[in-house]
Length: 483
Picture (tube, rainbow, N blue to C red):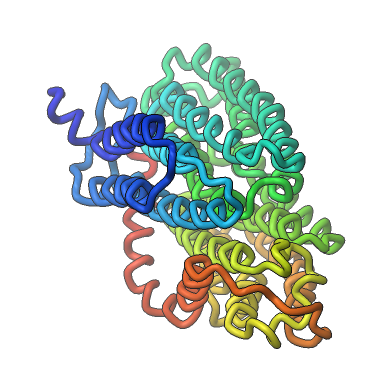
C-alpha cells in the first residue's frame, strides 16, 4: 500500500499527534491557558472524529492498523467525550486557580492512545496504544500534585498499572511464541489449526494472561482494586473522563483480541469472561452498599457496569458485540453527565462529594437534583431511561444466544442489578426527602449545562437517538472477526 493510502487511514491519529505537539509548544511559550488554547484542543479532537467518519476503511502498515466500522464508531465516541472532558477540566481547574496547559495535551495524548487501540490489528500496536493512553491517565490522576489524595491516586494507579502491563506483555509473548506472529489475522489462522495439542494450550495460556492485563484496564473484578481509591483521589472531571472514554477503549481491546485473533476459541474464553462479568457485577453491587462518598460509590457502579458490558462481549457474534457497543455508549453519557453535575456543586467553596452533602438538594438546586435523579434511575436500569435500554440489549443478547451458561449469567446479572438499586435509591432519597444540609454555591454554568444535556439524552432523547445508534453499532459489531 502506498504512503498516501496509509496516511489517509491514520489521519485521525496524525491530527491528534500533531495537535498535541503544537499545543505543547504553544503552552510552553505562552504559559497561560486561554479560551483560544482550550478551543484549539477541542477542535483537534472533534476534527479527528470527523476524519474518522469521512476517511476510508482498510488495513494499513501490513495489517498492524485497521480502519473499519468498529474503529470509526469507537473513535467518534472516544474523541467526542474527550472534547467534553477538556472543557469540563479546564473550567474546574480555572475555578481552583490550578489551570495548566498540560491538562488538554494529556487528554489528547490519552485519546490518541485509545484511538490506536480501537484500530489495533496487531499485539504490538495494541500494547503501544494501551501504554500511551495509560501513561497520560496516570499523570491526569495525579494532576493536582499538591493534593495528597490526588498524588496517592496517581501513584496507586501507576504501580498497579505497571503490574497489569507486565501481565499483558507476558501473555502477548506467549501468544507470539506459539503462533509465530503478532498480527491478529495470523494468530487466528494458527489458532484454527491448533485447536488441540501443546501449541493450542500454549496459545490459551497466553490469552489468559492477556485477558488479565486487559481486565485491569477496564477495572473488572478481581482486577478492580485500584478503582475506588483512584476515583476518590483524582480531580472530579478527570474521574468523569476515566469512567467514560477509557472504558470504551478497553472494551474495544477485548473485542479486537477475542473477535479478530481468537474467533475459534469462543468456548474457552467465554468461560473466563462470564466469571469475570459476574464477579464484577456482584463486587460492584455489594461493595457499593457500604459507600457514602459518591466518587467511590460510582467507582463500584462502574465496576458493575463493566460486568454487564463484558457479558455482551462473552455472548460474542454480531449480536453480543452490538449490545456491548450500545451499552457502553449509553453508559458513557450517563456517567459523564453525573460527574458534570457533581463538578457543578459546591458548598462554601468545598466540593460536595458525599451522599450527606446531597441532602435536600432539590430545595436549593432542583434542576441538578432532577438531572442526578435521572442518572441514578438510568444506572439502576429503570425504564424508559437509557440505562434500561443498555441492559435490555445486553441481557437480550445473552438470553437469545441459546447458551445455558450465558442465560444463567444474565439472570444472575439481573439479580446484581436489583441489589445495586439500593445505593442509587439511597442517593435519590437523600436529595428529595432529607432535610437540607445547607445553602449550595452557585453552580458552574458549563458543568451544569453538560449535566442537563446528558440528562435530557438519558430521557427522552435516547428514544430518538437509538434510531441512529442501533444500526451504527450493528455495523460496527459486524466488522469484528474480519481482520
